[in-house]
Structures are given as C-alpha cells and as structure tokens.
Amino acid sequence: MQSAAVGGYLYNDPEGFDLRSEIARVEEVSLENVCLGAGIDDLLLLTCRAFLQPGRVAVTSLGGYPTFNYAVAGCGGSIYSVAYRSDAVDVEGLAEAAQRTGATLVYLANPDNPSGSFASRSSVEGLRSELPAGCLLILDEAYADFVPRSERPVFDPEDPQVVRMRTFSKAHGMAGLRVGYALGPSSLMGLYEKIRLHFAVNIVAQAGALASLRDPEHVARVVGQMPSIRDFLSAECRKLGLSTLPSFTNFVNVDLGSPERSLRLLQELQRRGVFVRRPFAEPLNRCIRVTLAPIPTMQAFILELEAALGALGS
Image 1 (cartoon, rainbow, N blue to C red):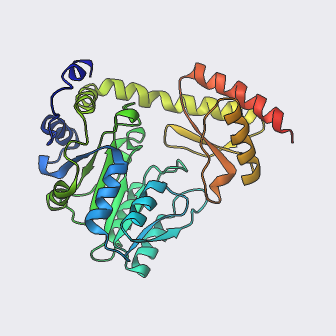
Image 2 (cartoon, one colour):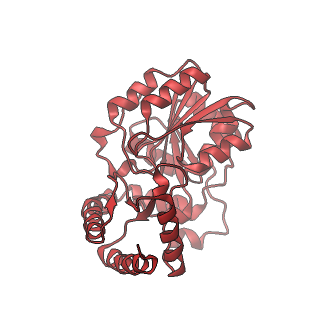
C-alpha cells in the first residue's frame, strides 16, 4: 500500500484486473462474475440504480442496515419492512413479503447487521427458491468471513436472481479504504459496469485488498480471535448484570432492557469519549452494539462501561 501511494500521481486500473482476478480465484468464479465497488454501500446504490424503477418495492428487515433504505429512497423505490423475530432476521417473512408485494429486490444481510444473527444455509437457499419471478436477492455478506465457508449458502454464480456482496472492511481491516465486490451472473455484472464509477476503488485500496487476499493466514488469525473476545465481553457484561445477544460477527449487542436505558447509556459513553452504536428500531433498540477489539482494548471498554452504568444509577 505504501508503494502504491508513491505512485498516486498515476490513475488506478479502472477495471481492477489484478484484484478481480484474485477475487475470482478465491471465490472460484469467472472474472466476468466479479464487479468492484467502493464498499458494499456503493454496490447497494448501483444495484438500486440498475434494477429498481420508481414506485417498485424493495423488501428488507425493519431496523436492518439503513444504507440500503437510503439507496431505495434515492431511486424512487418503496421500502417494505419485515420485523425481526426473536432478535434475528425473519427469513420466511422476507420471502412471504416478496411474494405478496411483487418485490423487485429483497435485501438480506447474513450475518446480519445490526443483530449479529446468522440465517442457516438451508433457510437462505429456501428464500431464493421462493422469490417471485424477476425479483433479485441481494445477499450482503460483509461478515461472512466470520462464518465457516461450509455453513454459507451455495448459489450458481450465473443464477440470475442472486447477487452476493463482500467487503474488505471487516475481517480484512480496511474499512477506511472503501473496497468491496459483487458476485453475480455476468449479465448483471455487465449492467453494473455500465453505470459504476470506474475509478472509485483507488490505487492504494486495490493494492491493499490484493495483498490481503494473498495473505489468508492473517485473515484466519483475525477471525480466529473473535470467539474468545466475544466470550470475554459477554462474561464481563454478566458481571455487570447485563446480557448479550448471540453474534456471528465482530460485534456484540449488549442488552440494556429498554430503549430508554440504552439511549441514556449511549449518551453517557459518548460523553466519556467511547463510541458505540445503538440499533434504531424495535426490538433491538434496547441494546448497544459494541465492536470487538483486542482484549486490552475490551478491558478498557469494560471499565468505561462500568463507570457509565454507575453514572446512570438504576
């Protein structure tokens, strides 16, 4: 990345040939099945621009990743939201809503943001089988690296009703560089190529993503640390009288019991210079969402959390 930055006076490769070729090798697809984007946010907007006509319906989870909603609104589409069930995505509800509304798009983050839940391979493949004709499943797999490959759903890369999205922001640790990719049929990727910003993934981001793909041991080490860090955070929260939600990601939701208390805690932590997130819709808005970090950082967080809870009182 440092070497690439020295050449910053040059244009980046607009086709991202080397990076796309490596992605195709890792994902076991053809080069034509891969499209680069400046993170999944960019790819979501491209998808709505390419496939969602004004007034048509897009189905998503109520309280799910909000950037998809923004992209739908920006393209004149209509959002139909399906509530979470037992603090997890209601995959069957998404399928039913798509059929009932004649949706053009169905968005599923798996593992989910912000709940941290994971829908099984069979349930996601079942969702695909129940889509109405002409409906595209957007499978946001930003956190897929944290789930064993054998447990992820399997789709033909030329399936005309599925596009999968991946990112280098999470397990690869490159969130600020903004680089992600879509996997889908060559015909759909060809549509993306017509409307995407070809210089969006800059020269440093391409170099870093390529190097990270060629260093799978590093990503495996990062992923391997997550279970013990999740367990540590959950155990420390229990000592403070708090419970946590199951998570298949690099974050954990800490349950405060009510939206009012979670908001007060969020504000108190912010006052102390600690940044966490809070899901914005019921039922998850009773929680704060804490991103995982090495144990010393988590220990520092626990101290601030305990102090913040003390400041709130009962």
